[in-house]
Length: 180
Image (cartoon, rainbow, N blue to C red):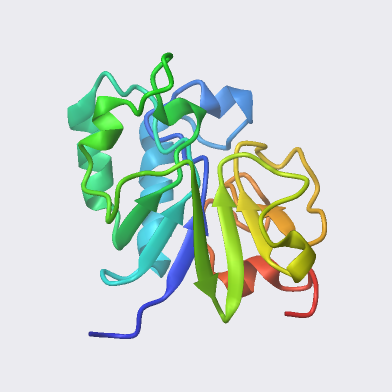
């Protein structure tokens, strides 16, 4: 098996036309947006790489064919830490999200090791997270760049300038934050 890399991203909001104006994002149409994000993803992620998506994968979940088509175009073994747009109003995972070929069942929070470091993954920013006093890291989404990084915690969403609509590695995301 080839060398496997780990990547992190959040808040792609595939198939969500309103995101173009809510953020705003610099695309004329949602198709242009989706194609750009897919191209950026596939430019860095290999077939065997792991991608942790920290929520709000897509909207328009009542169009499962479109969501499956987008998902199938993305390289890598994909894990989802679900966000507010990945669940139904009753809090259960949306059937369209559940039906995608995730590498494991989507979870509300995940714990991973990367570059020898412990990383807590969630959709929502936390002021204190498991192991924060022991030097563990925390990656989150949801904030769309509106919350500053704090200590070893940071937004990994596609709207962050240094993320630039592209999944990033632990090393890229932590560069300059603290000595690792």
